[in-house]
Image (tube, rainbow, N blue to C red; front, side, top):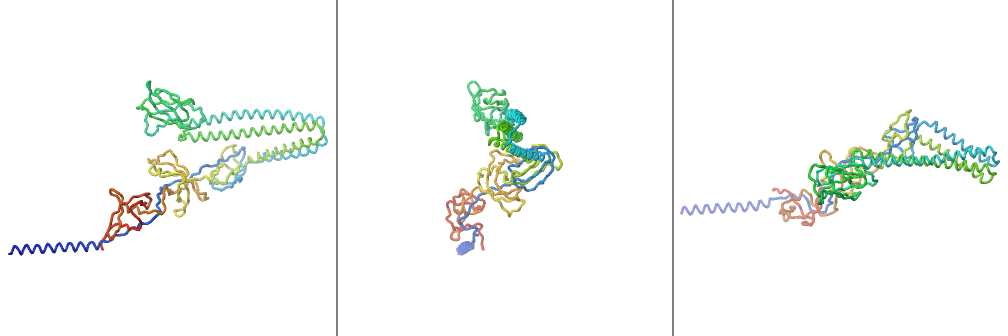
Length: 515
């Protein structure tokens, strides 16, 4: 009996505990609350790349005097803004002024002679006119010979400068994934065409071969360590004797090598040679033209003196007047050559001359920045460069103006060659920047490059997307948390596009809590 009472007591206690647990579980479930972090809706999903760049000028205009002389006037200083046609500096003009006065006097004389033609000419006048024709003919012939000599000389100088540019720092570059065997380039490139050679190693029954493509097509056997012609334009390649050489190993040779340290100097020398050639030929042609005009005038004057005064005589005298006018114009041009005028609207960045200084001709003394050519150069890491493409929009701020002043630009160019900055591989990206007088070269620019966007698509915050075997979010459904698998699209800076799994209006929850 006592044992029965004990078992009944234990059974009652067990039932009581079970009922207590059930009641606690029911009450506990009712107390759970969930924090609603976001209600699913349509959003603009934007993906951006952040970068820092520098304002750079595409071109500075180097200005110089065509003539040499003593500096008499200096009208600008560094930092001044100038307008197109503004006189920046002037040499001593006393000699040039005298030449203008002399040419003006010659014009007055020609005009007086026009009036004299009506009365005819004497024998001594005819003899003098004949001698003038002979002298003008000699001058004209000399001017022609001088032009031919100048043209030949300038062609040689330009060809030499071009050859120096094309041959500057030529080197064989191993293509990605190819051998580490070194290859050196020798000889002198005699061609004029720019481009790339590609050399690929092969083999034949008799030994190693190589195939050249690109600027030329060529195929030959070769011996390592021995210079072998690349083609027919003067270049040779020597394959190193160290290392293992396999069929398919390849090198490229860029002509010219724009990455060489000497390329910019050689390129500038070539451009300078072209400019000098143009100026020399223009000057020589002007001399020929002037001599031709003088000869024509001398012959016309002789014909005029040998004939009776006729309408034609008056025409010749009129030609003399025009010649004198041309000579006056030439003197005025010389006067203008003693001045530097700005060819553009811009900003003066360099002034390398002083009042009273003897200035050499063609020496750069003033540099004017072309404000319209400003752009931004920035380095983009290799992890982000694949997202960058031409014409992408950019929002910019500058440290100089603070974060509230924004500028708009777009991607203009992407350098295909990488650069290493602080041990990190980067690619240079060039971007446009608005024309603004406040913007100056060297300023730091903060760029937000919009690489992808979708407007008004169903999206959720990035922080609410979770992963296990699949991507999922947690929604609140009938007061309970429920994990919903989702298919995602574009992942932006803040939101991620949802392609399937949600319809909109769902409440996403995060941490659950009790009252």
